[in-house]
Length: 541
Figure 1 (spheres, one colour):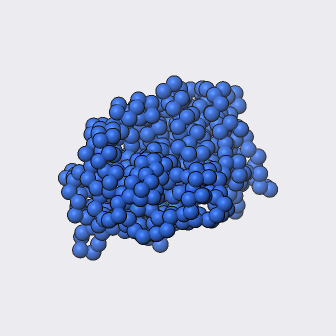
Figure 2 (tube, helix red, strand yellow):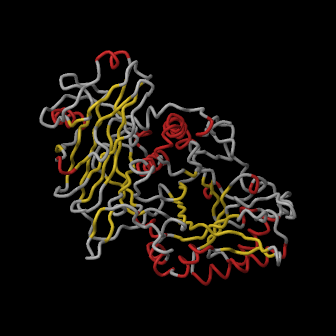
Figure 3 (cartoon, rainbow, N blue to C red):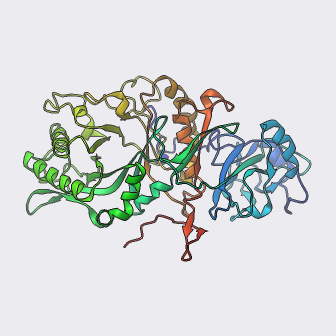
């Protein structure tokens, strides 16, 4: 396969060498330095090592805070060696204030040293490596804006010796503190990136999407192209095509969580719609052997009527079809055929009209013949849908680039299918990014290849549109996603924009940054706001 890497195969075991590397120079400050024993000289001279972050492709890590805000931002760091040292050792991370002047001069931005009161190390600052290890465990840095005026700050973090500065053993956290906005964030119009989201209502409230706030800014400079919420289409799951064995009916099973959300649409859905997002429900299989690909004509009529009722009753903006988890091939169930799914799509369009969105997620065999009108019973699927996009977004794989028009490119995924009949290129999303956790760093090198080599060829030369799709959105939780997912989210946005810094250079090109200030603040009973975890977790049982 061309770009299919699986975490379980062990094909890629090295950690990221580009996207996760932070590299710069350093000297020690005895005031900022905490006590600790440096490793023996021999292991560090014979083994090359670097201080790195899972949050940046360069030596700098961007942090965005809001003046007076009660939220926080987490970033991480670790030490990486080219090979295990002969003996285990420990390194103390410390803040080197003496680097400030040289760093400001080189970067061209006047920054102030971040006060000690505005950062902490929840896991401590000691990086331990055993004789068998090539990297230390991740350590987190927690940033807050309490008492800080709007402006630019920096935290130079190093593991180099006091009198032995080393560019490979220093990271710079660039902390931007902005003034709070007095007006509500506007929804980004999607002219450069058109955002498609999924939200799993089994875990989160749909309102999670309204706290996904992005900044597009020139990488080195002050020019901000836009600053706002994102999420042009928000697909809510999980809804299933179920099967009633007693009656033989195909049933629309909303499930308890989705039913609750729809019953309380005024609270959970209308605010997103009023802000400009299109909110749709995503339908997939129930594992009972009946799916979109083996429905009878009678089952299609019945099922479409159920869907129409839900769409109209609850005022959602449309339907997403994702034929996965159907459980095809079960004993007693009809065999798959290539006409059933297209018939369902055509019937849904005719029932819902053109004012509602009808989208299809391209995934495995169910959509593999959508190019062939002979196989689909004369139905050109592209005539009946508004958008289609990739459904390959496993966290255990690198991002899968589907490009039906350029399958010959070495980095195009083997998952790629032929173009959907009559669907314009402008309405086909070629990539669906996973929401990566820290465990995904094990395939970091392969991710780097896709993001910083392959995408930088594909985006300016072959990208057919600005559609960018993301797997189930995440919030601030004290789990394996913390201090990682949000920066990876922003990096995926950056490389997908044809004006990005990697193509145009840091002085002319743009970078994206995820602003999680509002995502990281929880309301208290007094009506104020406090920092916390788990905002937008479902508030029903």
